[in-house]
Amino acid sequence: MRTLVTGGAGFIGSHLCSRLLKEGHEVLCLDNFFTGRKENIRDFLHNPGFELIRHDIIEPILLEVDRIYHLACPASPVHYQYNPVKTIKTNIMGTINMLGLAKRVKARILFASTSEVYGDPAVHPQKEEYWGHVNPIGIRSCYDEGKRAAETLTMDYHRQNGVDVRIIRIFNTYGPTMLPDDGRVVSNFIVQALSGEDLTVYGEGSQTRSFCYVDDLVEGMVRMMGNDDITGPVNLGNPEEYTIVDLARKIITMTGSKSQIAFRPLPADDPTQRRPDISLAGDALGWIPKVSVDDGLKRTIAYFRKELTG
Ligand code: NAD
Ligand code: UDP
Image (cartoon, rainbow, N blue to C red; front, side):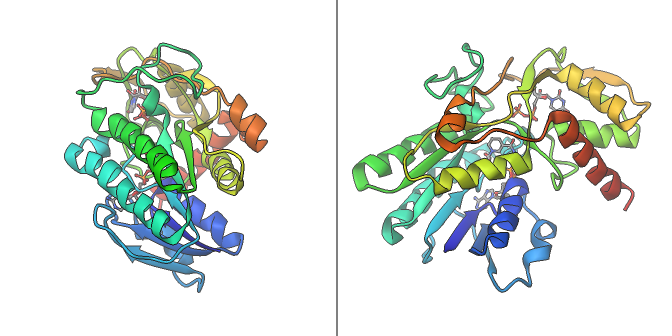
């Protein structure tokens, strides 16, 4: 099985490449290294089953593959807002290119969508049937509207051209190999706590997120790709929900840090609540997250402690 992973040098992509190589896939990792890094895939570079392609998915590419995991897109608000036009081009033009490739070579393609398609949800927890509550002209729109349009493209290629598609909606996922300057909440708080800096809580910290450990997510992705019966979308996330200020307190306690909490302005359109309903993933894929937030944070703290002390 020859499998393409777009965004394969990124956080989730590199964990997925590792898993696929262990399962004996030939893995083509495609990345433009915007937020990905060689370090993430260093261990695979000498594996004969692994091939690295430096390429920007905004440009078409001809490859022969059986499966495509399409992840390429910056995921942290800091990075996707750095060049919003590029973010929406990546989501739309990049996804058209990958769907076109899937169509040409008759590959099954899994699109990595996001809980952001639910926007600032008026329904809680979020089920796949919920259409969302998204600002089409805000600072998050390049990402969330981009992903929504990419979902539309995925379903239209499926209906119009018979492309074999899968859509997953990933909820906040964390774990080792996140970049220390990634900008997302778990890595920010752990790095701040370990460096003795204030933990920057945006707003009052009453907004909630639900946090999934990366190994659990990768298991769900592999199951979704291997499933012959369901195109999705399927939510993949851990329903363990925390307010952001409680997460900050938890990380201060777990790291034994003397850091304080510093409140900062809340960015525009920051969703007030988020928790996946994962009954569909349970029923269709037999998937349920196994790593508790306590355990996953312990592993992630251990990783950053090692990284920061060299
Ligand atoms: P990441 O930023 O670590 O990885 C994204 C990868 O895509 C990077 O390696 C980057 O260099 C690459 N990339 C970006 N634009 C590209 C382009 N135009 N051409 C080629 N490569 C490009 O983020 P991640 O957390 O690993 O997220 C991976 C995917 O999962 C993304 O599509 C993201 O939207 C989705 N997702 C992630 C989360 C999460 O919590 N981590 C939540 C929801 C959805
Ligand atoms: N957040 C925070 N401090 C930080 C980084 C993020 O309080 O240093 C908040 C952010 O405002 C949001 C939540 O944490 O409410 C999750 O942010 P993240 O960027 O990780 O993901 P997303 O908002 O895309 O879910």
